[in-house]
Image (cartoon, rainbow, N blue to C red; front, top):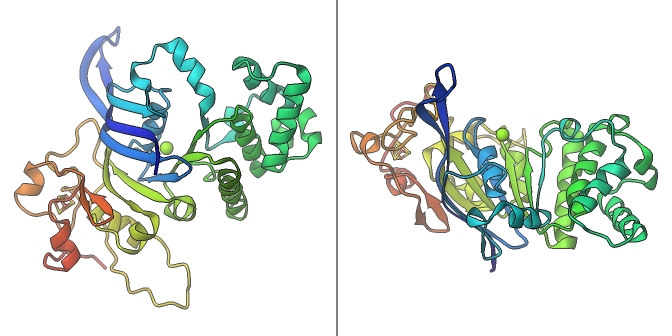
Length: 339
Ligand code: SF4
Ligand code: MG
């Protein structure tokens, strides 16, 4: 299985500045703090976590839209983190992003034709007007938009159609990788499935590779081959999708899963409810040791507060918990599960 994207020890630390000139650095927000992951070509990597966990920053850093402050991103064997800006611009057409809210990412004064043509011009794609027309026509067909859409403006479309325009704008450039940040969370539930199915179909037909970022576990489940769970800037668990949802190993993943509503009301829900104490700590001042120890129902003195767990392989998963095996076997029980 060929790896298209390799992320190694990736860090994005934003300085927190004070003073009249904002030139006094008083700390750093460790939005992404040492992430390792691989995305195989033609597959979908789903990235989940609460808002503020760093998943969007990771997506942007992967594309070098936000410059990483440490570590490395390799795309198709090319180290993006050492690439001069002019060369990076040439790589952009191969790696595109789609956003949560197409309305805020589409220029309201441009009609669809000009939105799509702009990208082609920017990347020098299509030798003639006819060639560009052909590419745009094929792209509209691929995303299921009619030709008359070309002369219309973003506000004339529904939310679902606008997301199709956002997808078309990325697709017209012929990318290999698409980073989709919350691609359906702004849409009605009935429309979400249509857009998810479209992404699936495009992947099938075009061999696309996806990083899909979502706070909604259900959205990611059906399209992802592998899912990574982030907490406070770090991956805490990664597993094949079927595995993660049926046998979560990390306490944080267990808590996320226990909060997902049961799909079938006739099936008795025998899952343990795991309620987390407290709020998500600030990424400017993350807890020592295991970052989850302030909220973890299984936390053990004193190792959990002292030693940061590595993301290590357990079966087909990777898990950052000192006690994952003991928790899975039931040898360790949660301290208190509030009803
Ligand atoms: Fe909980 Fe300790 Fe595992 Fe962290 S290392 S998830 S605190 S049991
Ligand atoms: Mg986000």
